[in-house]
Image (tube, rainbow, N blue to C red; front, side, top):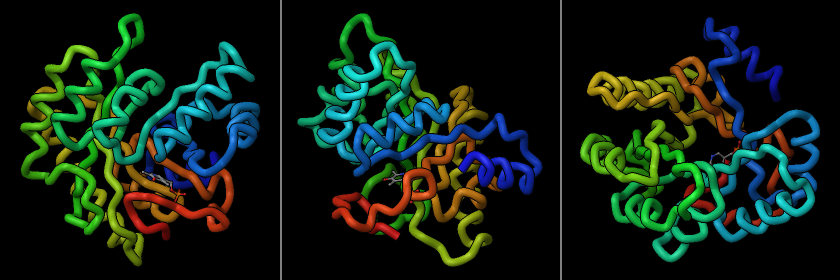
Length: 232
Ligand SMILES: *Cc1c(COP(=O)(O)O)cnc(C)c1O
């Protein structure tokens, strides 16, 4: 996977150190995370809160002190914010102020602030998750004020598109929103976009973090996927 990412960066004329790899371990057990850890991977993404927390606790028990960074990348219901605030380092799927407020209030004292990306519905896709682009600036302003959150950037999950160019066009819309917020002084450093099927186009459009599941861990097809988007 690292070679594929390096190639995508080279093709885009970018330094490979400017694009982080988030290994999406959803549906895979703690053993798969252990193996990736042994291979040098440090950042892992989980979609389903309960499953993610169980894995975080399993890894904390089996590898105490291991420097693992856990990212929540799935939809968050109000009744799950406490779990997220207590266990994850990052949340990339914040798309409304109510969830952000709860996460800030429930972040335990003594933990570093939660690192946050706002999920944007760039292409207006039927996946209902993500703030509409027109409402993004107001949400960013409100989230930036919350004491236990640190706003880092944007995340998007476009609908699958057939060609590299079609994928790139949508990712460039996210890039434009990201640049516009930074032009207003937000100081964002994370543009999380690109998955197994479209990471080259995302890197070409300026992604700083690709979230990759199947191309790292293999197929998930044997398992049901209660995701907020249909699996490709
Ligand atoms: C599952 C998932 C990914 C990884 O998808 P792959 O196609 O397996 O690379 C990335 N981001 C989110 C939000 C996901 O739910």
